[in-house]
Image (cartoon, rainbow, N blue to C red):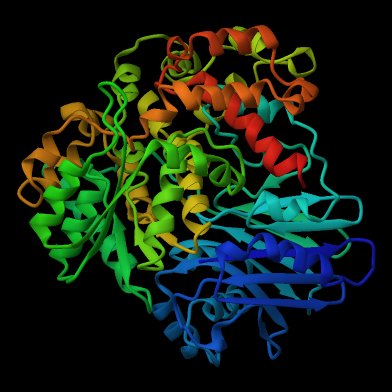
Length: 593
């Protein structure tokens, strides 16, 4: 619901507000309703507000509690703040506002760094504790809200976007070789704490960081979900009932905790359709729904209106159909890429950007279906992994998921960027974490706690918040996640995946929506690169900036340019788009910084 930033001086000097103002300018689109800044000795904080809860000026930020000696900048929503507020009032804390921001302040005063364990929601925040002379930062369990960090010799900076950090002029923008390997093998996913740039890190999900004015740091991971069967055996019906209960609660919470209307991004798939059905079941009326479609390319459909229309009619929603012609997609492509905090290759990133522009004219908050496929095994590669009997688990995962094997990666980049097989090492560490019963348990836990954070979740936050639109993701409610990770994978993978959700949907949604083949947010023009789109990619990769950067091996570039539709990744992404997107992101966000 906002953009946050700040600087802590580590050299004993007082912080100035001018650098904060520059960072806030880059965050303006995330928070169009109010801008505020604060300084106190070595620290300066900035905030851009998207007003959703307690619309009064009392909830503006940075929020200062002089009685407690605490100041906060916060991005996100705490769904259980009314209950926490009541508990804290019972402990003697006095409130001067009516929103969730002040509840976090009081919770920190009451419980210290453990306060995050009491928060139910999505959040990234920083609290300046003047009495202790330290800065406390935290990120939600699933990393729904972003928090980028940069530590230099004399300063510690943080912000909601990379672009804001780059305004400091202190960031090392050298390409990180480990980040680059992840970028080109995990379809744009660079797990925290790394990014594509050496000088920018991100706070991992479910992590807090306390840093004092002398530079000492203390990190804590406060949530590590297990993927083990419960001690008491559960029937299939019991699992389905438990999931439905948790999902219903998550949907209702995300619809109720707001002082503005909440809509739904309705793709026409099972996940977003189920959100609409459960809202209707909870008694919601006049549900606002929004769908987007693009032009077909050959046999590849560019919209799923036929399914979203069925759902809209079933529940009588106030439905908005948005159709974007290909020339408009190409025209707006650089604009979308300029608003990506990191280079994101998912073709639906641009779709979400264009959709959010239209939706933000109607509402400030929407619910969206991200996370369902990862939680309940909805992608086509999961059954393939489950059936594979390769003993080496990293190889078993890689052969169905990696965009490039290491040998191809070495052919893709030039000599300065060739190194070890970093992605295989990272995936090996993630799969080796304790607390999971089987290979597929390990895969699904890794996906929902790590890979999803820097793929669909990050895309949705960036592209919606670029228009001052907050996206809420009920499937990533941490209580639902904890339950789903305990479920036997074979139950999730029945019927081609997402079996429990299909059971919940039967009788609630039209059968055509439940029984349809798995769909993806369609944008064929960025998968099948032809005509003006191919020319656009060629111009990027032949540009003087690209040649001077010397990141990609020219022979590899020419090979994929010559026949782009022969070079798809294992999960059907365009390898040409991967190269062009990364280069375009660097030109728009780093070269121009």
